[in-house]
Length: 229
Ligand code: ATP
Ligand code: MG
Image 1 (cartoon, rainbow, N blue to C red):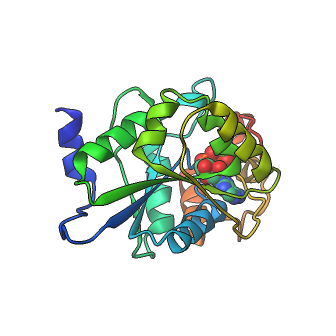
Image 2 (cartoon, rainbow, N blue to C red):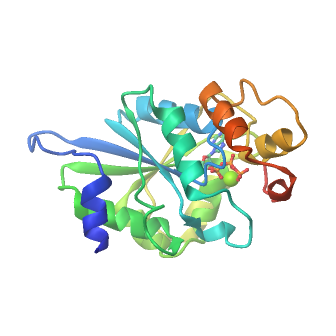
């Protein structure tokens, strides 16, 4: 099966009315697990940039987390579905987890660009930490051509530093900066709390917490993965 077929099978229909522009947000992440920081970022990006849909895209093998132990893609995808199910403007995609090998954002954006007609504009949503990495990503210049970037504030990161790095990169990124309610929540912190038997209520949805408990995720062997925030 070619990647184009996978793409056709799992991506939502968009762009049928050729008289209007569609704005598709892509929220990439490991989502190990998905939490309210991700959800509020996507929702506020949707509102600020008038997006028609935000596609949550759990990474298969994340390019920058290859040396770390990550929960199975199926579990991360299932939690993403649970957390996004009640929002009509959110959708979860299997696109990256069904692709073999390492996930590169540029490949995903290229496939989306090929899949959708020109009246569908692509917006790649990130937090301030992730956008700092973008300049070092595989084919960063191509990413700049394919999508508008939405950079959301995140506690512990300075948006001015992000601006400087983007400018210094020499690539022609179109970046929209949005200020969102500060939630100092991270998946790393949730994994650690679960492993220690501490409460994670109100850090992510009840449905995700139920899934974590039911499947016994984040026992101590997995949590020693360290990440900033
Ligand atoms: P980990 O601790 O495992 O790295 P994480 O909480 O950083 O997990 P990721 O899946 O790495 O979550 O992040 C996916 C995207 O969501 C990134 O663009 C990241 O910047 C953004 N993001 C995650 N948490 C927040 C938050 N609390 N506020 C704003 N953006 C966030
Ligand atoms: Mg992270």
